Image (tube, rainbow, N blue to C red):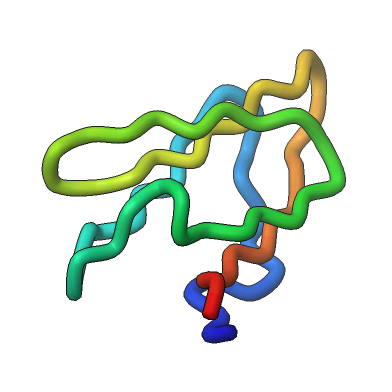
Length: 65
């Protein structure tokens, strides 16, 4: 399991972009968060967007083995 992003703060309604490098897909990610988020799959990147109603969230993003 590799950590792609560790304890990143995502402000309210803001996205975090993860480039699709090395064949990375949405199903390969494990997202640990202290709030609500959306995952959006684009052709060139994966977007993790803060979907909490009124605060920033902290996320850690890992890949599955």
